[in-house]
Length: 97
Image: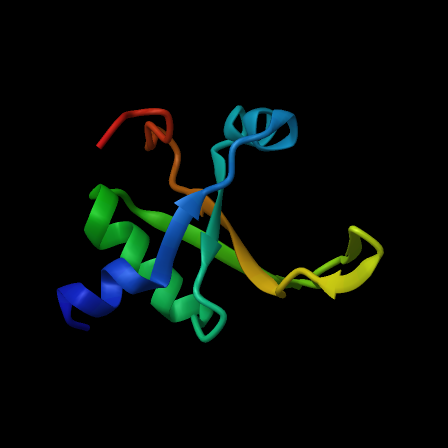
């Protein structure tokens, strides 16, 4: 897989209270491309962060219906991936690029 494709697979890490608790059990959450597969996510994380991935779970998040100034709109759908790393491996998601 090319480096450009790897960079397009992982969009951003998801940082919240829930993801902070998951990091304690060696799981990390990323927003990924809507076309990304489990294999794509595994290759991208292993290549970009130099870690060993044990498992990947992906799910589609449906966009919410919202109103703004009495006009109805809809946020776009997106996809996220839960990545479990091998024992002893870590990723610093709070590091600045």
